[in-house]
Length: 226
Image 1 (tube, helix red, strand yellow):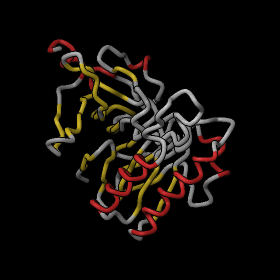
Image 2 (cartoon, one colour):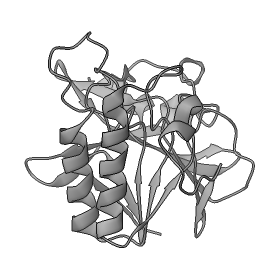
Image 3 (cartoon, helix red, strand yellow):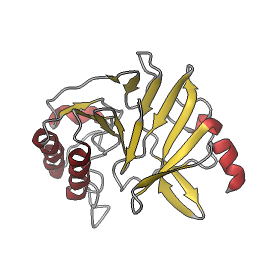
């Protein structure tokens, strides 16, 4: 199944996947302008849904940011994500992440530990998968790559990465997450147990201006070029 990259999201056939929305980040007073946790995120999400017209949309974990509280603005943002899918007649599903301890406070829709799309399983990635698949799509680590002194959110694509199956890791959908710089990371530096060989992870950067993806060699080779 072909992968389509777009604005920190991934399209698998008729399914759109975003990970690590971390709704509520920046609403606690630490940031004066909480761009990314509210209107901006919903607008980007709605644009993706309208552009790709998926049958299903999967929020692959860490929908919420806070473990213990739900700021009042969070409910409105989650409602905006729901409305975008409802308007497009797309089914919205959550595969919970480690941050989603308060998810029940704002979400009463479908929840699945893992969501299957053909030969692919979508999950947050903080725990090993229960099901087997040819490919796993995860989030959790918020990868970024530094190129010529500038950090960019990136996808990481690893062939044969977990039990012989491919792994695709998405960047955080929330722009407030600085992310981790993967340039020099080893497998043990990643939090997701699905990463077993960082040298074989190939970064993919979405160029928003050109509206195209830029693919780079696996990290083991790419490091020597930077």
